[in-house]
Image 1 (tube, rainbow, N blue to C red):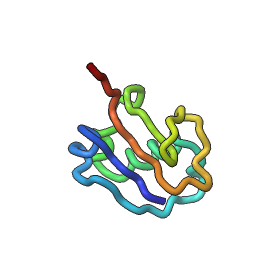
Image 2: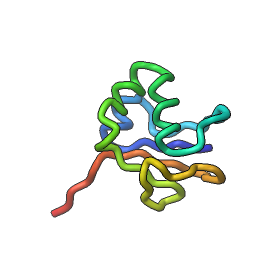
Image 3: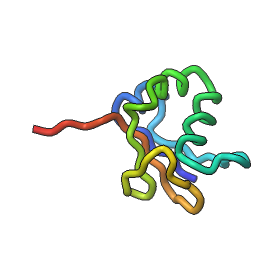
Length: 83
């Protein structure tokens, strides 16, 4: 599965994207974030305030309880503003 990081999430993790093989038990976006946070301090730092991180599965915005089975791409980004 491809994970893509944007803006300060990318800066904190130190990479734009990565391909991962998820372990059993990672079924939702929330599970994925918990697993990522356990991978190292850069992920812990990027997801320290999970409530502000937005997620999209295959370009569709989703909530933390969204099931990730079958996803090709999951993107993480901070809230955006426009003007």
